[in-house]
Image (cartoon, rainbow over the protein chains, first blue to last red):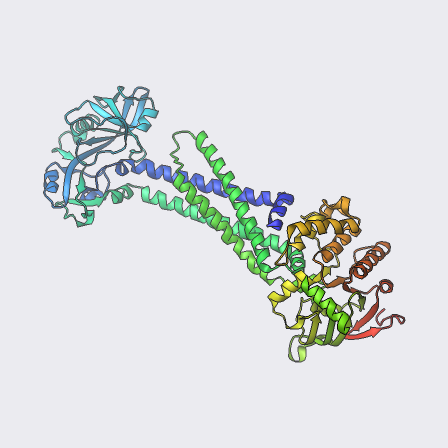
Length: 368
Length: 249
């Protein structure tokens, strides 16, 4: 311990470089992860906050609410399937609307109050009552853009009054408003004239299952396919791809962290071969020298990670709201642990070198 | 330090030398590429004696001193230090032996560059399994005082002169109260006057403390401070009366 801390204190310069490198890596990984989480959570909130266990889409929609269109009669058919406790029509419309501060991009959800597919993350106010066709609950991001309980939001020629606020319930990075099915239909025919002549339909059927029932065990009604809510979230176009792309960048960066630390300590050990040989000659065990290096790797990575966390939080504060980032404590803890573990693994590579140092080389050279 | 007193009593009673090297050979490699670095060397040193080992580079003197100090294991022959058979020890046992019973002074002091003079002494004090911090701190201060380094104790080696560094190295070698002190070319990095001072200091410390010291050197002028002179040439060890200049010089 004595050697480990004395060196960090007195040979600060070289440790600042490794701490700096680890801080930058942590910062990069945390920012990427915040972006990944921001995209994922911003895209899938409507599903994750939903009380539904699954959704039935039209079979050609590949699980996308936007592409899907199911006849109204399918709801009654699903209600009769054993294992389904609730089935409700859900309508979705991506459109711009007008709020108190001007234009908004919105995802309008038409829901059946009291049914399935209803958000569970209400933080204030309430959801619209059945038949209350001039009211809507809105996601907190709509509130961030100037709306509040009592304010009016207009989509096409239909206006609704905000009666409640939900959180983390957005869809495809669009702020959601939650209104009744008839209001959704009216908004849709107002902004999408081509839908006016169609037979009454929903985007999908939200389903609630009895316990023990899974999406896969439900026999789908003709022309539809059933996905669990989790599957439906991943089926949102781009979500899976974004997540896997960002995750591979994150894992690659953690690998780089391990390599950087491995290289740093390989150099340190190489540079100190003579000293380590002398210390071994004096009776220092290999284990003690190994502990010294591992302690230094641990201390450097912990300090680096802390600086990286602070830097990424500062970035999170100054980033404009349009950039979808989400700093989750869970991801932060996970990434911190990964970075520290990667550093320790990197440092482990230098232990073989330490073990191979021959104390006899401390005296003049072994062959003389 | 019970082994010390036991060994000392042993010597007084039987006159047995503290260090005994018997027919030691060290061979590197095998078959006809084998190189014999030390051939059938025997020597014994009494407690309180400071001896020098002379020889040109490549003569085998470092190999011999490395085996005596438990850094190398002989191919054949025995080395006894007090009541311990150094030549029979495992690597792990040799590590503790070096920490507890052998003090080293290297060619280029080889102090830990990021520890102060005092911390360099305390570091070796922390190596033996049973160590007492308070006792070590007191001993380190005493040693630094005796070596005239009290006011330099909190400097790192970079801030010390070459002579001061070598004095710290001597302090480090004495720190764990070893039975044997091995000195490898202590004057290599110093000028003649300073080298002389360092060797004089070593000789004095060895005598005063009743230690046994072996100094490897190729500098004939340093021989006058030692009690016995051994010469080694091509791996063959002979005892010299110190009057004729050793071969190779």
